[in-house]
Length: 119
Image 1: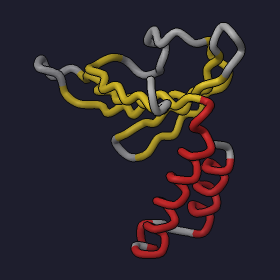
Image 2: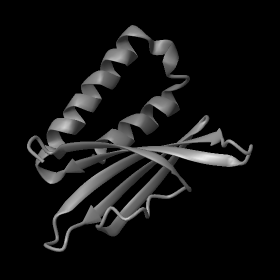
Image 3: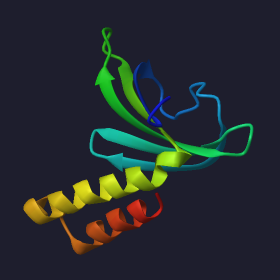
């Protein structure tokens, strides 16, 4: 995988991330945000290493009008957890400084900080 990041754009599917990515489920966190749902899944390899999948799921109307879920997924490997968490925190801090109105309240801000601290 080279740099430890693997972005895979998924087509359609249902909610959840049990879509055959191979790892044993260790921990899952679901975040509903408007029209999107995010899944943060910690998985274990056969050798006991952890990796993280972050899946964005968006509900859209299908051709026949029934709901279809479009998914995008990022695989993040153990050697890049710290770099990824630092980069994400830096990007969010930038937005907090330059567009503070995007963060509705201090409680929302604290919740975001707590989520990043877990990475």
